[in-house]
Image (cartoon, rainbow, N blue to C red):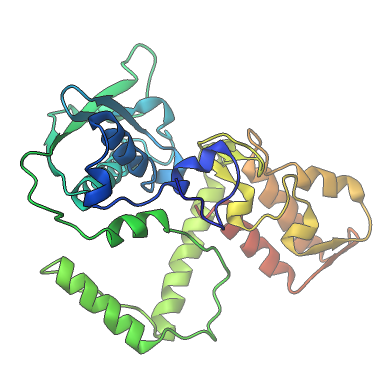
Length: 320
């Protein structure tokens, strides 16, 4: 294990402290240790709303890893058919395969025939865990490393940075060209088109605004996302921490959202509790829109334009 300097403390982040292994180091691992190493990489795959729906069972005797879908964590409002969860599981299998190939091990994947109704959110009287696929490791068939260890390092350094869009920052044309070349080299038939012109970006922004409005107006959807938020200092491995969306404290207040309170402190307390697990996200937006509509009559001083506060809150708490 090699701890990264920017990895948060807590057991929930242990897998990120994994050290990438090449073929020489992996050859010294026993069968179970190799499977566990690759399973950790599988846990680092991106999953919808960080629900982590993949369940992995290791069999050292068979040199096999079985993957199942846990329907209990599929979000019924945002993923009613289980499509996002299934794609998440596929990302986990891809990470495992990459780790094995970088370790010089040959792998084969078997995907089971599954009724599409069995991958929907769990319901009473239905089986919550559904087998989806298996990955078999074969060290004897391996012929050296089939993938660069840099792929594993890329998995371990993957990050998402949430920030407000700044149109003054321009994409370096050489970087755009390099990205297009990488896509063409690894995915024949596909091409990357980077959108940089202002009219198209404005149009996409309008579509995003419509999407945000849809989330807010669908109360069950908004509540579902709010239930999936956890406190910043939580060791819970599932869910989304407020700090990952720009909220600075474990119990954020209006100051975190760009507001300086000069009166009516009880509303500050109310808003400060709205990003906790199990509360209604709709209440957050209602409070902020009230500030905008009252135009500071309630005694708040907003840093910048009031409308910017509403949009910022939506982006940080809903745009997930």
